[in-house]
Image (cartoon, rainbow, N blue to C red; front, side, top):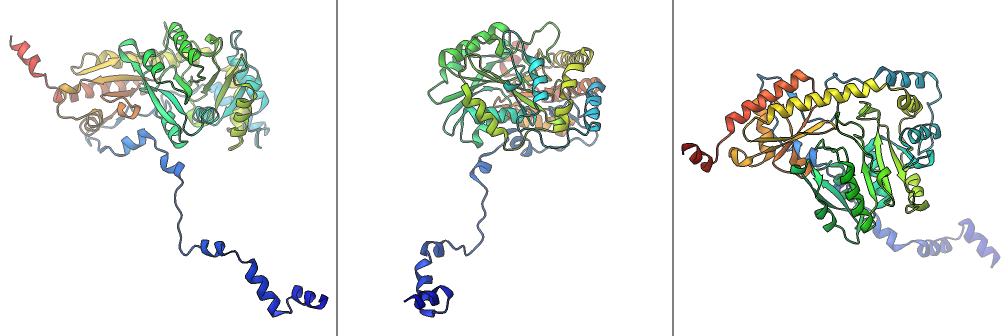
Length: 450
């Protein structure tokens, strides 16, 4: 018997080997053998859609060859070269590179010294911050992604502004999260329709997103209005994701008030970054500030953010190395110069377009944008804002983003970061375009005849 076993183990018994082979083969494995290639995109990738790209890519954008193109559509202040960052910011990065200290991996949440710098910069008695309350991210966009990911599960819903930044929807839908849009009111300088907001809340609502100052509206909420927003969140026990990437980019006479210091109980994840205020969107440096004075988030949300940050190991280490000096040493004159320019361009744009029949611009109070309503009934040549802005490119080589991209049809958004002479020229062309296509309604004509 022992000889038989040894022969079988050594493979000398043909009969024994064939029996073992027959027993060990799993029929299911044989059936799963693929006969042909079948590589498919993931469900997440198929559900990922950027509304701006979807709309713009579908437009027929053929500029008038006789007029140079003026793009008022891109939310990047560096495009035209007229808004450089401050030399202090550049020097801080150069010194970080020359130090050779920031060439390796950093902790996924960011260097402690860099997080301390952010915490110190934004901390205040009403909303104190320490380094443990800061998560560094690859731009504000990743900060928003991390915040949504840690607060929401598939099947949950989030409340987002309409009109609003399209990334919220792009991220949420790809994760299986429902998006509910609450209305902003143009006649009230884009304040939130609080009654509508509260009507959308149900037991699946995981998060309220508040964007202030606003993209695309350029609006800035008053302290009083923000207290009312917090009251809605508090009554319904809904945490807030505060997108404050345009924080402090407000015009003289207007005050930016961060949301967290006003909150007595509502936990807030405040998202920000260097991109807009410091005019370096390509450097991809953002952050989340965790405001949880009543320990509602507890350790779970903090640990969740750390785990999620480990997926890509944080933002650029060189910029992290420069962060403390960027925050502490950028001169006030730089910020003031940026704001002065944006306000001047906004006033030019508003003044010019408010006298164009058929257009109704809403004067902004900050950020880099102005929204303009199209009285579509006076422009019968076009079905909607997409056709209007498409033809504006064809005839006048001026590209404004149709507000359908922000879930708000019959408006368009203008970016006010272009050089002043370009803004003036764009407004002249928009006026010519509207004069060509404007038609008074029949009742208007009748009134004129009388």
